[in-house]
Length: 425
Image (tube, rainbow, N blue to C red; front, top):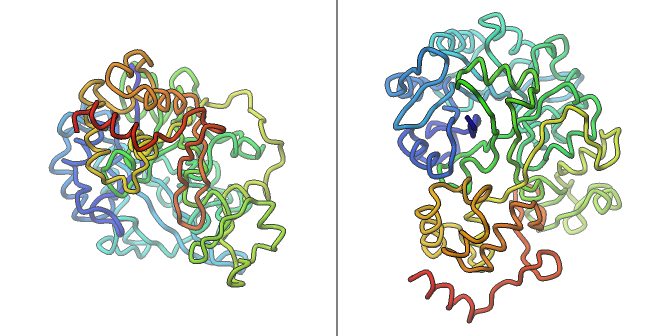
């Protein structure tokens, strides 16, 4: 059976996270998105751990749990801040655990490492990456640890602000326990394939969502083909980069991510790697240092040309969330618009869930429900042809709809009126 999974998100107990991020909303919107398995996130937080332990029901004792018709895997994210080689290092790690019993042992060990579990759903530890990995792996070899959003400037293994130049430099002798990397929104597999040193790692993709809205939850995901949905089966498929079981990842265009290009948000300056190097990574408006983006960081470390594909690479699909497509198509500024919601809900009512619309529904079927231009935009999205004005320094990228680059014109005011009439709005 085909299984769509998003393993990395946060609960209402994490900072800068919606208070609606509870099991009820995560399960509800996960089903609307088309997800089959979702990571719980934040299992180190005592209140969230108590909630998920009381509400999640085990499925056959195989490390997968269920609530309100949605399957869950026990996950959390840990932030480590420490000194190495006279530099401050800030690296985030995604942790998968096979059972509540193992989670309880993990949480006890995190306390011993000085973690204040009550403080934040994303636990902060002043310990090195190798030490954290070593101590967790002593609890159980079934635990899986993945460098989170591996290229994000501020908190990642390769981050331009506080990271390393290799996985081995970060995890040292504990690299043997690292089997995968999370691409993050601002990079995709093609960018990671440019580093030959990453060939041995499987690439996974998750949303790192802080809200349950469908333009956040499942915006990046993993697709599996499994005979049986179990923790060990999923972990094994990832560790072995098994293309028969791990079918593909779903990725937003990396330009959509908040740190794809180099830039300075306060001055609204965004630059390609070449442009940034031409000004020595200094903001031309205020003279402060630019935040070096993921594309530039990849260029610094790459030892392969663009377009290189390793022979055993897991495929991927590039997709922008449906709400973003509708927003750009209608020329509306906010994703929370009721006009967008009505169009979105009408499509969901017709086709079941968002992934079905983005991946499978035919153009002919779409045109029976949606305006033909919106249907065309969905098809272009399926083909990975949506051009994005790149994100930078914490600013999300924006889809660009113009006739030259997209083959679809932004609809005129009169066409908007026709669409609204067609939609019954």
